[in-house]
Structure formats: structure tokens, C-alpha cells
Length: 103
Image (cartoon, rainbow, N blue to C red; front, top):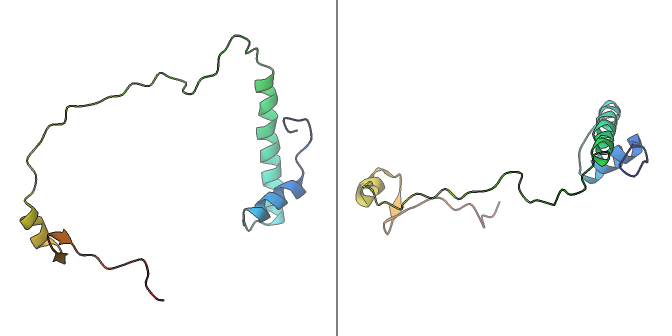
């Protein structure tokens, strides 16, 4: 049963699978229909909870930003790194294009 009390039908699962362009067979439709019905059934468990006085929240736990000091550390020399690169151009890595290629 769904949250509204109407059952989940295999035709509904098949339709959603088709809309999502999922190629599933009849056995998988039956399996997913059963699984989805169980998941939707758990909503009745949630609906049965007494949540009066419980305010909405965006996070279950308080968020704390953990920031570290921005400390400059020694790094590799640009010329040394580019010397090890397969190709470079104007002090940058040169990579083959991937967008706009005519196939």
C-alpha cells in the first residue's frame, strides 16, 4: 500500500521503468513491485509516530565547519613538473581536445 492507501501495481512499476528507460523483464517487474510495496508500507510506520512538538530540521546532527589555517607549504617546481609531462604549452599541460571533435 502506498502512503495514500492505494496498492502498488506491476503496471505502475513497468510504466516507471519504461519512462526511466530501464530494460527490465516481467520477473524483475514483479520483484520490484514487491520491494516497492514493502518500502511504501514503511511510511505507515512513520505516519504512526507521534511527532507533535518535533520541529522540522535540515540536518539530523549540528553541522560544524572544520577549518584549518591556510599554511603555504613547499610544492613541486612548475618547470620540473612540466618537464615530466607528455606535452606542455605556455607553462601549462597540453591535453588532447575532447569537445567539438567531428566523429
